[in-house]
Image (tube, rainbow, N blue to C red; front, top):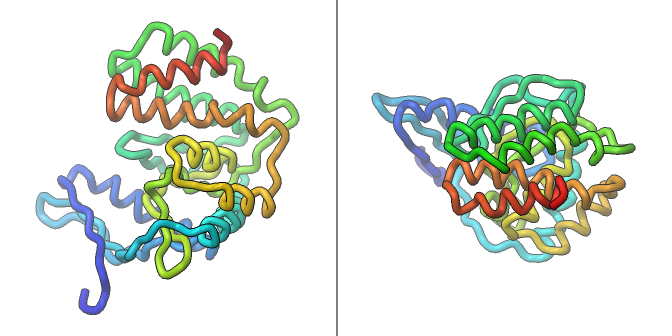
Length: 252
């Protein structure tokens, strides 16, 4: 692609669904006109290799102004809503499957298709016992974390950690999404899990869309989904973190 800086990811042909889902997510984010994402040039399979080719950014660490701009842009993205939670297709969170059947009730969607799905994967991976009993108890008690709060189905980045955004050309860019429609608080909770976002980001977001009552109580809930996913992807080093979150949510 003469004249264009290209970032190319490859994998075995079996990775084609991951790259196709990534391209779909980037297109959905770009269509809102709220956040800058890399343009996808090509995605497909050649021989025994799957690939995705996209715009390459010269990334730098975000300054305070960039943090503020991204906070406001994320709030604008979350104003893009649908009638139901989920997505027209299943996709991936990292390399884990992420089921997205359209569902009107957020608590039911998150309980079954986020926490329940990750617990099922964890069981297959040999993590049983207290993880499963507390996890299922939490799902049964989820309604208590949503008293007076009915989340709108907002368009989400879905995997918003510090490694999935940066500054290019003075402004924010983001990539590697796991999009779906759901509670906007999930993106904010994920952003707090591994760092990479400073006070200007959160101040700008909250100024654009103030928090709902009880948001702080739901941070651990939404972080649990990603910690369970890391447990399933990377192994037992995340079991202690998952149990700490579960015990905090269900009572010692």
